[in-house]
Length: 183
Image: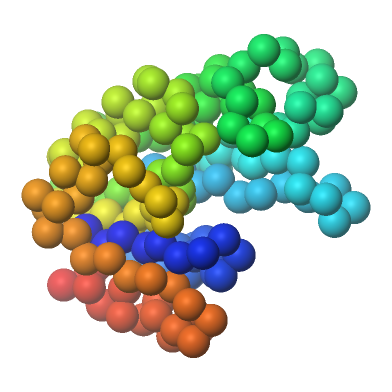
């Protein structure tokens, strides 16, 4: 398992997307999800959750103002100034992970990211743990302060290799990660 971490904005998701694209080009099926930020007029309003395999998407979280403006409940779990939209998270994230562990043996698990928003949804957290337990190959982006005991334990048990993305390595690290996942 390959684990990517680093400070916010350093390029973890760019590296993740580059590696996933290459794996698909090499004929691998990649299952899981990624959570890109969404901006309006330069201001971050939330995060999508997108199924890597199908492209299906929903909202992981929206700013309180935007969630109200779009007609979502403002009563969901709050992470900072964001409201986590559990129904979308379960519909997209949980189903994406279930597709992974019901897939062929040439499948790779991809998750960007395992962080506070994703782990705040109990059902998604359980599916992340199950998927990590079953995965032989995975590319994961984890929050730099990940402290979920169960997830850390699985990553340690699986001898995961941690890579810290920096400004110095972000443009070349993807080649090393691809090689590790293809061997």
